[in-house]
Image (cartoon, rainbow, N blue to C red; front, side, top):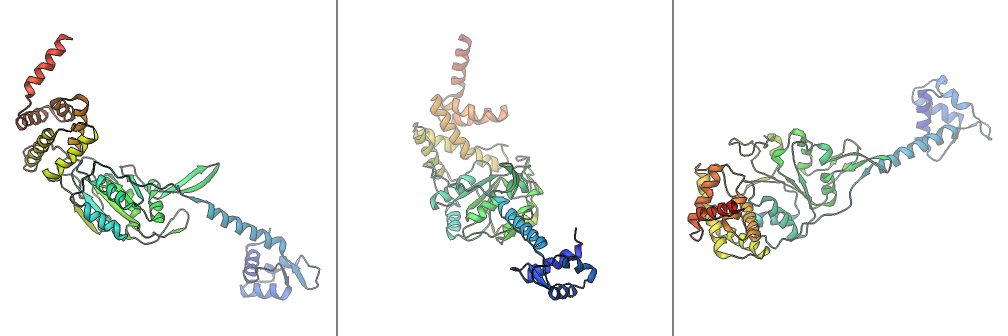
Length: 374
């Protein structure tokens, strides 16, 4: 086995004369001396003479070195893979443009890297709005659901065993960067400090994947949008117990923040009516009453009068449930059953006052009578 110093001489010769394997003694000696080595270091290279006098054949050491380098280069090229499938959001006929939708669409249309943080209460259409904006612009849309277990391996990628070989599989973040796609980090306030791996990516600059050494350059159109129930400061009222406090340096990398509220009664009635059409259960009076009922509850909620709120999503669930049972009060009862008994009874009583056509107590008695008969 050759000494380390002798290997270094061979590497220098290979770099200086890439197409050559036979060298004159003077070239070998001068190269060794330039590296500060002695006769003991270059002597092993003078053991194999070539057919030409005064020249030495080093192919037995140079060729293996070249093969090793080519193998290493091939390995580096093959160790990164990415799922080539592209995902696009589909236009939903029940969607009604409102609020920040125009601004989000304008941001995405610019194809500028413009990280955006959207916060708001659950069920008011944050994610749906971003999805439908991408659908309108026919932009590739990659959604990542964040939870406390989400880490660098989930986001950036990690090593996987594929066809008996260990390769680096790029995660959704790198895929979005390379494809110039819109990356939606849904419920980002459920994450832990493991998402700090996205710090550099949120600056819109090329990033080096530390596990492979390759550089990923974001393509035009790449953008990051995050949605959350809080503004990254945790939930003081306890409504979102899983919400974490996000590092200030991380939040600072978002260019703008949007605080999305519930839609106005007029817009929300359009949303409810479109869902009624979807389930073939159009009822204009019911839609108007539901929206008025939800609006009263929200105003009371904002005044700290109640601890729960009826979201737009909850109204759509009520519409769907009513299309099955064809019973307004039963639909409402089933869809708010997750609330505590006092809140549930108060909400049902309030709806019976908003909708003069129903009597909660009377319908409840009928159900009890039917159960007695069974």
